[in-house]
Image 1 (tube, helix red, strand yellow):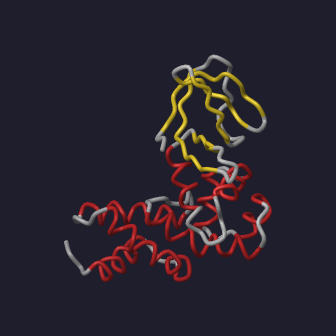
Image 2: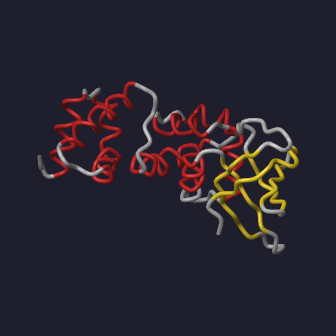
Length: 196
């Protein structure tokens, strides 16, 4: 419905911000990690909207497009609706969530996001391939290996989509076998058909 809203901050309350756009006031649910806004300051938020059973719209506002992409990916996990996805992102910054999921840190997901062990494990299993396919990488040695290998494969002519699909499969092998960049490239080429 909406891609983004750009307007002036009219109110900043615990349960939402009010953004005035073209004479209309839009109430947005914004995570606590958003940069504080002053009244009258112009801000832009990427939007997702949902219709409640009562007939009202609820609007979620995200400062960064990547944060909204993570919100969308969360909703693809079984049992996670828009309310739960927003609750998770309100407890754990989206970059920390990506790191926890890619590094399979279910304990931190449980403690910081308030998830059960079962839900944390499901996030790791179902969300990790989506994140890798979307091009997200953890700030960790494993993430650095993938970034370097990705650059080489891209120069060989593979598309980011092809590379990310293969990396989603290779992710666990890299940790288990302590693979270096050369081995990742070799394994990726074998799965990609050896073009280049």
